[in-house]
Amino acid sequence: MNLGPSAKDQDDAELERRIARPLSGSFNTAVLSLKGGIGKTSTTVGVGMILAEYRGDHPCAIDANPDSGDLAERALGEMLYQKVKPRTVTDIVRDIDAITSLTALTDYMHHANRLHLVAGEQDPALSDALTAAEYSKIHHLVSQYYAVTLTDCGTGVSHPAMAGVLPRATNLVIASGYAVSGAKRARNTLQWLAGHGYENLARNAIVVVTDKDQVSNRVDKRAIEEHLAGYCRKLITVPHDRGVADGDRISLEKLSGNTRRAYKEIAAAIVDGYL
Image (tube, rainbow, N blue to C red; front, side, top):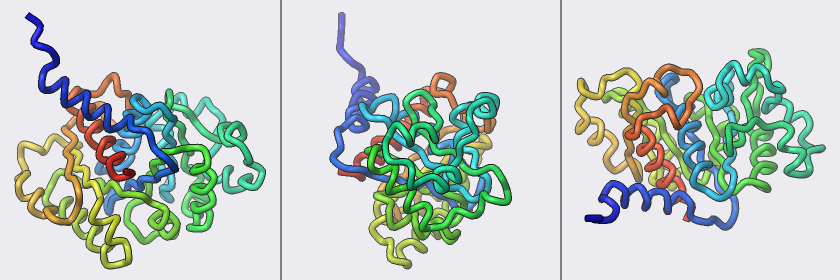
């Protein structure tokens, strides 16, 4: 007897439908945190790949981390990234006036299947040099060709590029650690945003709590939720997954079903915020 799709199958289909909805215009989600090593870049890559899998258009991810961001390495794998042309955000800034088509822009990007990436600068002498004006120019260029852009920011909200990122963000993803202290940092970030002219971004933010250290059984999840209650639109937890925690290439095929589902929930919530 065929009982039809299960409740889980129906829920997955609904998430995929929400992710795939057509968009009119260009939208940008900034992914940020107050502390490093708590899942900000892995969330950007994982969610970007989910968006690429289910949307008809190609999403773009920009590495705007001033501390030698590793967005491209997490998406491609370090060995493959080292073999391709070392084009970074610095090259786009240098040549931006000559980049007048998608074909020209593509030559400066990296590709992880259907996810297109602007790699971060790895030279320590240059990596902290991205200014708000330069980010604004890059965003303006990318927004002409991509409906969905994810911007992987640095830690904190006060480095120079953030003055270019926040005014151009449609919505925010705040990465948090799986502890009350991490929730407090996320709450402090949202309070800072609300107090500095970004109330709408704070109110509609998506907080993502990633269990990178297998601590989910040792923390008070209710306390984390209570710390964030009323400060964001959505709270989504990502379970511990070696495919995320190891810090190497993120491959959707190697992630657990629960992790894939969490990334789907984040992607769907992001697109919800565009409509």
